[in-house]
Image (cartoon, rainbow, N blue to C red; front, side, top):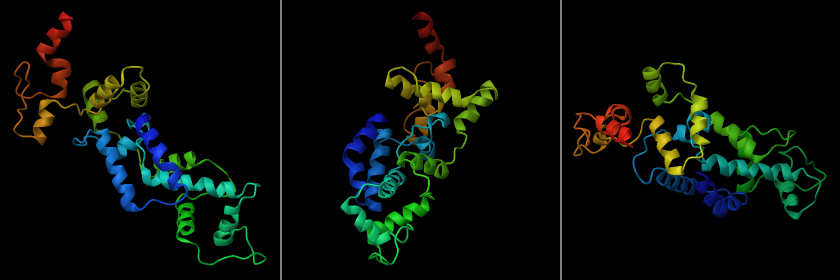
Amino acid sequence: MTVIGSLVASTLWHVVKIYPLTRECIDSLQSEIWKFVWSKKPEWVRRETCMSDYLNGGLRIINLDIKSKALLIGRVFRFFEESETPWKDFMRYYIGRSLGINDNSRPNSDIPTPFYSHLLRVLREFAVDLGQPSTSKMYYLKRIEDCVTPVQARSELAWNQRFGPGLIWKEIWTDVARSFNDPVLRDFDWRALHRVLPVNFRVHKWYSRISSACARCGERIETLEHTLIHCPMINASLNYS
């Protein structure tokens, strides 16, 4: 996920601070991110979960719409700083009165440009308190929390049925996210906990021509539990090693 963030940051964030992206552009870029995350294969974990924090089993996938809006908020707080720059005159002229810092002693406009109209909508959407300067990151995280309500993953319920309700999931998800394992192993652990490893029973649901039986021992249905715990061939291999 760091790779995605760095890639997007280097090519996009400086643009959205100047001019808002169109809905078509945001949807297209977000779609490409999901294709990258799932390698253009079926998405087996809810997008809301993937965007959530590590504590909730998420991956902190970027929400481009919210991120691009949050980055604009920093411009408003920079406007209230003491330094003088030419762009502040434009901002004061178009939305000074809306921000409560302009009066009739200076020229002002009642019709903001499309950019400043968008900026005012962002301030209302994020409920920005102009008297309490904060970072764009803080507003992004807060908005994500408001829009992506953590829902207990179905996988947690399934594991709880097997091992009991005493599992502390926030610690489990955090251990996986902060593991020093190879990224491939971390991805395996994350998918295993979400119960979305491509075992034959799951793949069979998508591609009926593929048998749902275990290819190693012939068990009629190869479930996740069978693959990781019960398969005699897997157990024999582990015991041999």
